[in-house]
Image (tube, rainbow, N blue to C red):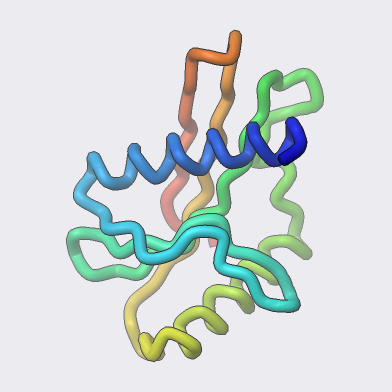
Length: 119
């Protein structure tokens, strides 16, 4: 695993723990089909299926991590969410797409900027 993949995995782990602490249940991680990948899929304590795009950085030198979610990426996330709902027999379930920016500083300190219903 390369450095970028390791940083991404650390960020996803951090967000998964953050969600579990808020009574979410993680349903899927790194769900992938030909069109792309969903980082995390969870279900909220209210039964809403939540798709989470995680962007992890070690610096904001190149901008805020959530700036990496372009309009094209947003449309892809929407299509991937609908595909996941179909494949997992949850068509018709209430869902939303969230985004989490994780900043890892000094290899130890994790900060999260969690945004609900970005799409």
